[in-house]
Length: 214
Length: 331
Image (cartoon, rainbow over all chains, first blue to last red; front, side, top):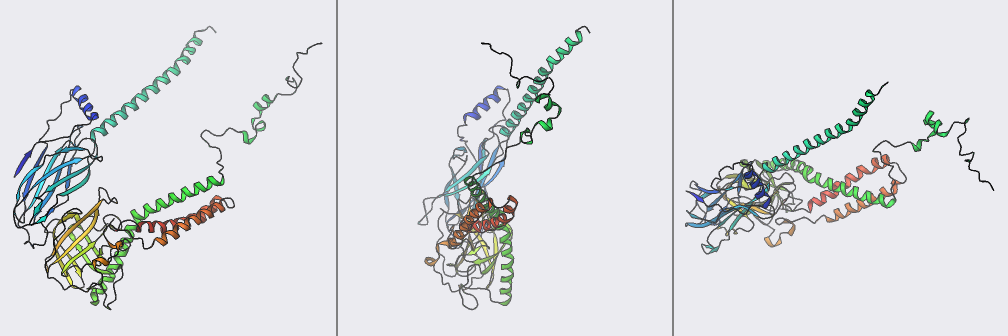
């Protein structure tokens, strides 16, 4: 089952908004934005017989796969988790994915998605694509699976998984490189101009000396 | 009264005696003393420190050396220690298996309580490249040698729940990849009762639901380590639950009950059992600083370097080793 989810992106910081504005003003066309996120499920083969004492619900750590982009709000990150139902009945639940900066601000997020109930013993792999992580470089991926509050007369808290990952900020790095190159060229030009100005009076004296009678 | 406006004889240049400026121009090396020679560009004047400044410099230097040796110990020496310890433990455990005296309970073949660090099992998880000898005990000093078996739980493969705790980053980081284990992955543990095969059930974090009690005749193994955003920065714990899929073995006699387990053997605990050694080490550093202060006025710099550097390095290594023990046992 593939479900397309509506994107819900946090407001871009003012710096990025200004950079976007500059790019648009310069006539640079932004690539069309793909659907911000999708969740895919992969039915797992039948597992080992359930022992009844193996617990109720398991969730794997969240795995990340980064696709960096050159545009300020480009790139994407795929978050993948596996949820396993070890109860003897169908297990409904909801799942939520988002990524945040080191300061906790959400940069990209998906709305809470209601899952098709997991069959007994089923392991389902959930993959979410979050677009536009931005230029913050360091991120934390979050995935939360919320089963019913009580399953088999036992309290089942939401399962939260987090993972730190890095997205190379290519746009910022390129902008810094261009800035450094511009400064170097400017410095070289200023140095040449100074040396030209310093040589100019000597040349004038020489011309005057040559012009004087012996 | 007449006013003599002529300059005094001493100030007027004599036509016979050459002036000082003329002499300087002719023989500059004679007219200007060595001390007045202009210093080369960028050269600094000689640094003269007061005793107080010497003391501050010494303290900062020793603190810096201590920090460096701490990082060196944690990032490099700890891994070498782990591999050396594992080699010795493997030899000892193989010998015990060959002799049929490998532990099957909390006591050894002579019914003497196993000391911390005694080998009890060989953990093999090929899918994540792990093969490590498990030792008895889970304090910070014990898990430096390898994954530790929690004393208040049965041995792997015996009826009941067994817990093995391992480090994620320092000292070889043997459990750094256990979170990659997938449900239904299998692995083996060799104990004195033979080879036990386990199938992974799943991964749990700290706030997840606790597992239900086992039924009689069931066996479970829990692998525990720390997790964090970056290596050496633990922010929580991760557990991998596995169920025995081979024959269940009889549980051995356990002397340690859960309420008797020392605090230093619990998850993310530190080991303060040898703080006295840390105190002695810090005292040695202070004595070294005082000796440095005494010697700096009496000996040359080379002699001070030759005498104090090796001693400072040795004491710093001892102190940093004690500091590492104060870090969590799952780091």
